[in-house]
Length: 145
Image (tube, rainbow, N blue to C red; front, side, top):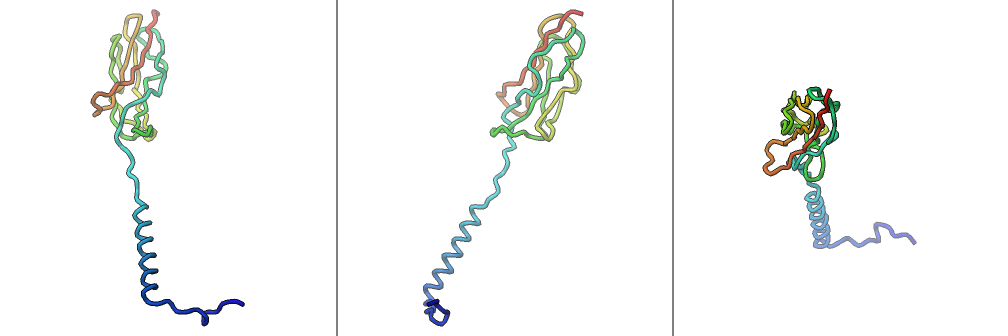
């Protein structure tokens, strides 16, 4: 036989109060658990996004300009981070040596022209503001014309 509302006993006020407090405290706890996690915007380095080794005729540009991806600790790309490319060896030249990482975290030098002598040339990409950061280094062999 089904139970009807007229057959239910009314709850004593103290039990109703405890039930309401239990529901309220549960809702408060759940609202605390839903917190926004701030994204990690701190760069930890730059990983190569172009070939590390290339070759080209001396005095000409490499086929693929050096490029890096700026990342945080979780390996996620970071936007708007300054990256400086510098010629380390070989006497070549760069265009667009100061870059800012794009929406994919990528910063690419405008161009890299190798030095006048055959042999090793290197360019380093450094994330500004990172002390002790090991730069990404790109190499190219300059060949005689």
